[in-house]
Image 1 (cartoon, helix red, strand yellow):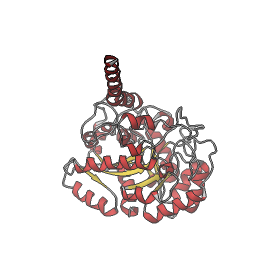
Image 2 (image 1 turned 90 degrees about the horizontal axis):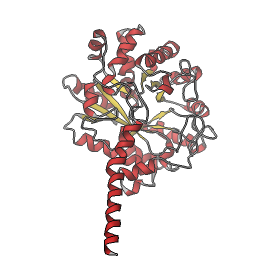
Image 3 (image 1 turned 135 degrees about the vertical axis):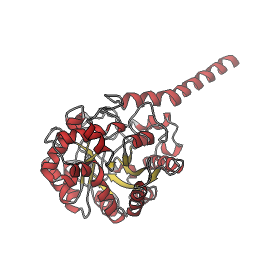
Amino acid sequence: MKKVLIGLFVLILIGLSIIWFIVPTQVGKQMNLTLNQPPYRASTEAQELHKKLLIADLHADTLMWNRDLLKKGAWGHVDLPRLIEGNVAIQAFTAVTKTPRNMNIESNTGDTDNITLLVFAERWPISSWWNLTDRAIYQARRLHEASANSNGRLVLLKTKTDVTNFLDRRKTEQGIVAGFLGIEGAHALGGDLNNLDRLYDAGYRMIGIAHFFDNEMGGSAHGAAKGGLTEKGREMVRRMQEKGVFVDLAHASPKVIDDVLGMSTRPVIVSHTGVKGTCDNRRNLSDEQLKGIAKTGGLVGIGYWDTAVCGRDANAIARAMRYTVDLIGVDHVALGSDFDGAVEVPFDTTGLVQITDALLQEKFGETDIKKIMGENVIRVLQTYLP
């Protein structure tokens, strides 16, 4: 009997070791594919221009995965060394707290959750196993800890003064990157508006209304009901605007988009999306939605994956940007990669020079390319953060 118990104990340890040390990495590798591996080619003109850009990306789900942000990874799309190599100045790090099984862009409910298994496998704190707010706070803490251990190379942006100070440093210092925090879906509040204060204190400055399913605040474009803002959702938007937290309309239902635009007093952001004008599906924004977002002074972050741009290269991304610029103006278009968001993309963050090259092929001038690649995001952060 004693030998049997010892054998069972050993098997349990082996099983846990597989779950904790092997499964998360394998899942991450399989879900965050890169179609083309570095080094990435671009024209000489694009390479020279790229060196002069201040690049900002509105969306990366990197904090969900058990990788060291300060070390160059062998898989995935974003970490500090690769951000520096890609000449990225500012990266939004967006927290994922719950996704449904078999998620799709047509219809999902919140009855199931993929992230619970990931949370357990990656050994997140026990409090985060069932509490979505704690999951977001844990991911924020990961970014804070990475910043604290980066010898000043990774800076957190929470205020407009932080942005100004970072930009001043970057004029004379090479190899530094700034990050700010966002959340995929207001279900991370757990239905309690008081949790908005907790998330704000953790550093979050951008929150989406919904992700892949409807929640207590409003409907998702991919939810079952796809409704508008609830009363609680309207109160959340009001509080966010008072605190200087950006409303992110990525994944929001058409009714939510209309409701938010109808009550917005500040620029709204769509952190990662495509546009129906070049890729017509439920995931992407219509012309009228784009015009409404622009009227708030907002930003549309164009994504890099096939569902967003109906293509698998930088040219498809640039085509979506050209369409959007022609419709609403260059001041409202930005990068919205969705790196590390369980998507297949043409390149990791070291390959952004290919977007610069594709924008040149779309006949954008240097001034407009600078805006699209980052200056628009920087302007909005520097103006509207607390």
